[in-house]
Image (cartoon, rainbow, N blue to C red; front, side, top):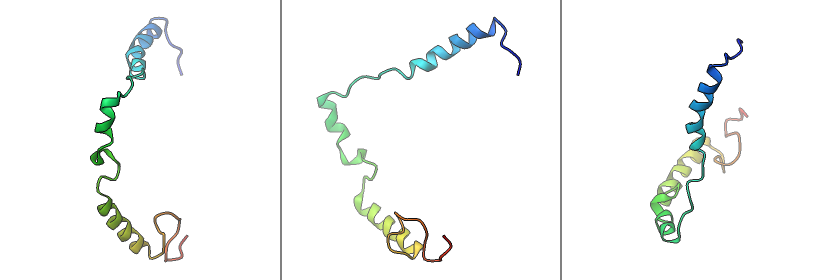
Length: 78
């Protein structure tokens, strides 16, 4: 690998400064904003019934009880 020339180092530092600024603190969530974050649509599983059906299908395909949480399946390949 070739060493950096003296001119490239400051350019690299200047190019990385805005990128590092993206890691800065974005602020706190205020009390009146927490209601928006607590809505059911903001959760990872917005529809619990659909999630239950999907988990049932996945478990049935694994052919083993609790196929979603433990490794292996009904085929004996693991």
